[in-house]
Every structure is written in C-alpha cells, then in structure tokens.
Length: 381
Ligand SMILES: Cc1cc2nc3c(=O)[nH]c(=O)nc-3n(C[C@H](O)[C@H](O)[C@H](O)COP(=O)(O)OP(=O)(O)OC[C@H]3O[C@@H](n4cnc5c(N)ncnc54)[C@H](O)[C@@H]3O)c2cc1C
Image (cartoon, rainbow, N blue to C red):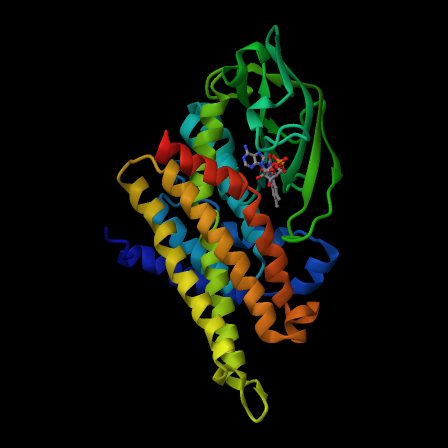
C-alpha cells in the first residue's frame, strides 16, 4: 500500500492550508458563542473549490479523486479552526453531492450539483428521527404516491445545517411492510410546500453550524424528486455513509496536527518550578500519546481514498476509520485541555472548543458502538 500523495494531491493540501490561513480567520470564538453560521466563509470555500472537489467538472466540480479531497480537507482542518464550517461542508458533500452524483438522473445532476459546488446551496441530510437513530431503517416518515406527486409526512431531527440549508436529501418509507426495502430517498428544495424547519436545536459543540428539526406536512414533491429507485433508499443511504464515515474526519486530522503543534510549543515555553513543563515525563508522555494517535489515524483515512481509487468497497475500512479517528480526536482534545491547565479550560483560548467539537464525532454518521457492530459483522459473520 502506498498512500503517498501525488504532486497534484499535495498541491491541493498546500493550497488549502494557505487559503484557510488567509481567508478563514475571523471572529471564530464570537461566532461559536453566538452559534452563528458563516455564510461568507462557506462561499469562500466554494470559490476556492472545496465543495466541488470530488464532483466532475461537467457538473461544476473540480474532478478530483477521494485522495485529493481527503488531502485538501486535512489541509483545511489544519489551516482553519472553524470545525463547524468544515463539518457543514462534509455533511453537504457526502450526504447530498455524492448521492446525487451516484444515484441521480442526468437532469438531477445538472439541476443540483453546480449549486452545491459553487456555494449557492448548503446541503443537509434528513435521515434520523426521534425514534429512529441507530436503528435508522425503522423510520416512520411516510412517502405516498398520489398521481404525479409524492406526498411526504413525518419529522426529522438532528439535521446538521438544517436551519440554513437550501437543499435536503431526506429518507421516507412508502411501504412500511417491506422494511428496509420500503425506504426511498428524496431531494427536497427548502421552499417546497409542506416543508419547514421547525426549530434550531442548541448543542455542545460544532456550534458554528446549526442543527435543526424538520417537519414534512403533506410535503408535495414532483415524481422526479425521487433519488435512485423507489424502495432503494437504503442503498443510497449506505453509499452516503460509506463515503461520509471514510472521509468526514479528514479535516480532524488537520485539527489534531494543529492541536499537537500548539501543545508542543506550550510545553516548551510554559515554565513551572523553574523549567519548561515538557521536561516532566508525565507531561511529555501526553505529547507522545497525541502524536502516536495522530499517526495511527492518518493511514486509516488515506486507506479509504486508496481503496476508492481502485473502485473497491470500503464499508469495513470506513467504519474502522470513523471509530478510531473519532476516539483519538476526543482523547487528543482532552489531553490538550489538560496540558494548558486553566488556559485550556476557559473559552478565550479556543482549546476547550476543540474538545466540545470533537465529542459529536463519536455519535454522528453512526455511533462508535454501531461502527463496532459493523466491524464485528464483517469479521465474524
Ligand atoms: C453533531 C451531530 C450531527 C448530526 N447530524 C445529523 C444529520 O445531519 N442528519 C441526520 O439524519 N442525523 C444526524 N445526527 C444524528 C446521528 O446520526 C444519530 O445521533 C446517531 O445515529 C445515533 O442515534 P441516536 O442519537 O438516536 O442514539 P440511539 O440510537 O438512541 O443510541 C443511544 C446509545 O445506544 C447505543 N446503541 C443503540 N443501538 C445499539 C446497538 N445495536 N448496539 C450497541 N449500541 C447501541 C448507541 O451507540 C448510543 O450510545 C447527528 C448527530 C450529531 C451528534
């Protein structure tokens, strides 16, 4: 296995770092406190090409492979501390753009992908319901075909970007008696009659991207809104999760690298008892553990890009990457707080923000317990 980046992939990473350092620094801590989404930052990323990275040029994208996308996202996470903005980009890319690219009709691709790539649209994903989380295919949202329309009824929760999104890929069942095979995927523009964002849901971390609850009340869609085939929504969802689990934490590799560098500088310069705190073995060991964790995460993520470049399924490897990277992300963030002492605990340094931002990663895109189930199923069968 050779995960080294090509000159073009490396160039995307280098340019993403330089772009983020120059264009994505603003009042981050203020926006985090105010729970504010930065639309201008979203559009700057789109102009640079981030949202369109894995989308072919004919649909407005940059036509890059997954490895280049992962490399650029790692660079973005390193150069930009706005983990919420990066999370929003990931949600839009993996749950809207990729499923539309893979399962959409030619007309759907031409209608929606250019706007998702150029920053006009923020995409969001409505799968979870209050009573259907890990057991996602037990969803109750109904889709009924009436003449030349689909009528959807139900509620979706925990929707990343929900309050600000322009486009939604939502899942509903048209045949509950058929279980998983009754579920279909739908593309829903925000202004669709019968569709509304009920409320914004405050949360612990990634506060710069709002989370919302959606109501579908006789939500009326043309037949062409179906994404993929009727009754094949689970396939669309699983494809979306394979890509998302594999790549959503690429940005977090960059965050962890930035965190580690900041911690190293701190333990070298912060003096207590007349010497740098890093001279104490129990302090130095935290740095060692952070570095080792980061190094074990990178190959797991880049392996997904490598497998996808070979056209292989990466369901097992994506579950492993999601499980391990999110665990390491939380542990490194906790170590960073400890290394900074009170300065790590207070809001004004931004160190506790990374910890709050990291915790969701063990829950979204399937909890880590569910990732373990997926891995166990593959290994034990
Ligand atoms: C920050 C964030 C963003 C999110 N964004 C979106 C989004 O954009 N769109 C969307 O649709 N959803 C989104 N979600 C929802 C997310 O997908 C669900 O939270 C997740 O699938 C878990 O479902 P649940 O919260 O209902 O927990 P539950 O399924 O109720 O699980 C509760 C606990 O029980 C454990 N558990 C449940 N079943 C099993 C089992 N079989 N084996 C072992 N353990 C089990 C879980 O691991 C967990 O620890 C988001 C969540 C978060 C935190």
